[in-house]
Amino acid sequence: MTASVFVSSTFADLERHGLLVHEAIARLEYNSKAMEFFGALPETPKEECPRLVRSANAYVGIFGMRYGFIDTESGKSLTQLEYEEAQAMRRPSTLTHK
Image 1 (cartoon, rainbow, N blue to C red):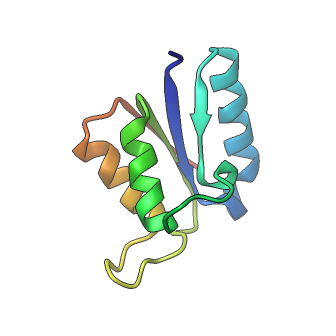
Image 2: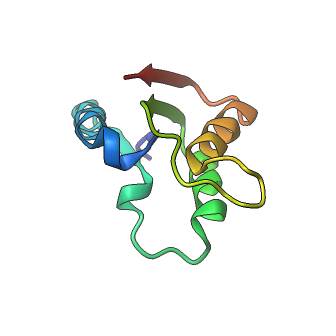
Image 3: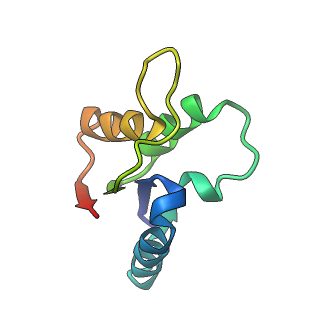
């Protein structure tokens, strides 16, 4: 089974950065997961993102100037919820701030 890395970022402002991270992960022969590649999933992004973070072996967060889509129930962005899930699961994490 190939290890997987969940890549979390806001897409609009960090598209190029995310692409470079996904390419680096692929060169390491790991699988990468990110919201922009999900396609159709059975649950809402609020349920699917934390589930996919839990299923990954590691987490990479790429943060810039945008906060991202805010979940009205929690008042937090999906990117923040992904980060908090990775920390709660004690996933090895790397954070990059642009």
